[in-house]
Length: 148
Image 1 (cartoon, rainbow, N blue to C red):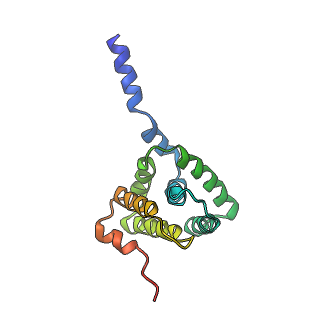
Image 2: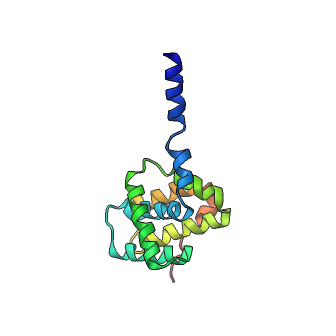
Image 3: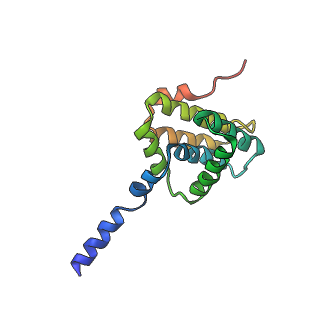
């Protein structure tokens, strides 16, 4: 009986984040983070959706159809995710600090695509920046500069 319980708990400890993070591509991990910001305010504005396609195609050098496929997969993952860990871990493993800062810049760009920044969008961007191990000064550098 004890052996069965031990085996059961060992199986549980090898679940989702470790195994799924290997299956998730870097493009999908980044896109899920972008989708989290887009979905945060509960309003999937057309401007944000178009901005997301443009960001993904240019960031990863993809065709529009490839970007749309990645976005479709990413939205499903985003809707079912309980946290950002498996996605930010993938980014942290493969991106330098400058590249992670670029991802946070893209998060800001997407958040402002509909012309306004909801406080929940700001909160999620901050949370993701923390999980990407950005120092406060690096986080501040990613924020858009005010237009004059």
